[in-house]
Image (tube, rainbow, N blue to C red):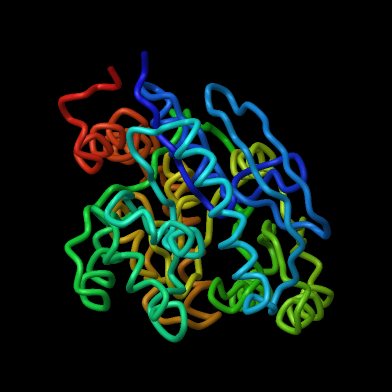
Length: 360
């Protein structure tokens, strides 16, 4: 009989929001290769409920809870309570060999009573200051081990929380190199929010009038999003498609020539890694995490964070594409050699102290 893993995360792709937390799904898929995996999560809608379903070999169960952006101080206690109920049920009846928390908050607060009994894989870049930092301290200190996704993130965790984190990374599907694509099609994938800085991409689109720009990602319906839409209306070479399922996003990337990343901070850069796995070059501002796998052979780094410099970087990338200077197969092979299911699973076994178990 396979050993059991309980994976606790705050988001997971579901029928209401198929675009949420896609990388959590691939962590679950990775572990399900040799373990029986159950995911417990939350779905934020406008009502209460409970759902359970199968995602491949992975069991998923979720409480549905109401939520409004900007009212976390109200909904945080509710999220903690619902995670507590699910965790208590699963610890009694599912009886996992290991409990893995993907992100310390809020689910870590629900399992503090389970002292030294869980492992944390931290994904968030919003825990460095304020109340999130204060709440994260006891969660990390109560964990058996804490892992980050990149060397940059691990250094941040080490410096701010006095930890010695494990570098795990994010697992990638075995994507294939996509030949062709329109080299002047530039894609931005990310939340329409200040920390992702899509506005600077719109400003670059004004300069590069013969390029076409596609924006994919959720929004919070806030003042920043309204500002984004106002700027978008003035452009004939840019569209916003909203949040899309992972498969639809991948289909757009397949048609693209360039992925652009303008984030202020990325703990890993999942879409960036996926683009490389399809042989698509990236134009990017330094955001931390992607430095582990982006270099001159697969990307163009823009050193100055302004629209003109970004436009110059996109033009440079376009010229390199036309000259055949990107070895797409090598790009794919290099990223998968580090973040394939198999490689991340090996690191998981070490992180979870299961190297001698192998799922038996």
